[in-house]
Image (cartoon, rainbow, N blue to C red):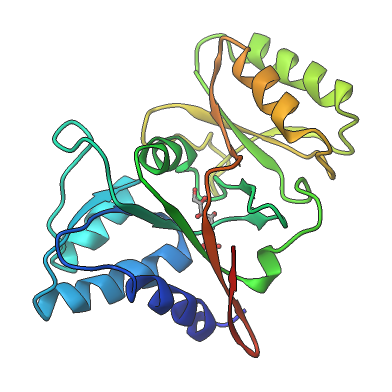
Length: 229
Ligand code: 5RP
């Protein structure tokens, strides 16, 4: 999907931001458009404060002139605008393709609303085609990995569990210093149960299932931007 369409979705979200708002800033290529467009409005006088969901977004937001804060200084945010890897009909999501799922979830959970911006390739009937990112502590990786694999078996996963690596073949490390296991389910038929089971594993820090967190999605299609509620 073209960058122009992603930008259109981002523009729809930017139009909802008003002066005085505290805004969670997502991570990824679609969220980058949002941050850039928000920066343009800040340059025109929009008075907002942003809370970034990754070091990469923080760097971009600073370059765009968006004043930043964090969840130690701020209590609640008005809205978080972020991308997604998969969106189902209930606006449940898989996120974390960019490795920022932990901060993304903390920021979204501290927001009165979460708006997702994406292109139509992210729409699915059932979550799970995109490998579910599971952020894990480095300590006890083997044990955590075996526990996640057992849960995958129970949920009839159709694929493997892989430690995420960089292009150089070294383990990918998140902003929080953790590792990511990508779990290929194919189809996640019981997302709530899966979420609870994964979080019960001591070495699991967080996972990329965002259930009942998103209120609205702007989805860019070749025929324009659709609003999903
Ligand atoms: C990062 C994310 C991203 O929002 C997700 O991967 C979508 O990214 P993009 O807009 O580049 O497709 O969850 O952790």
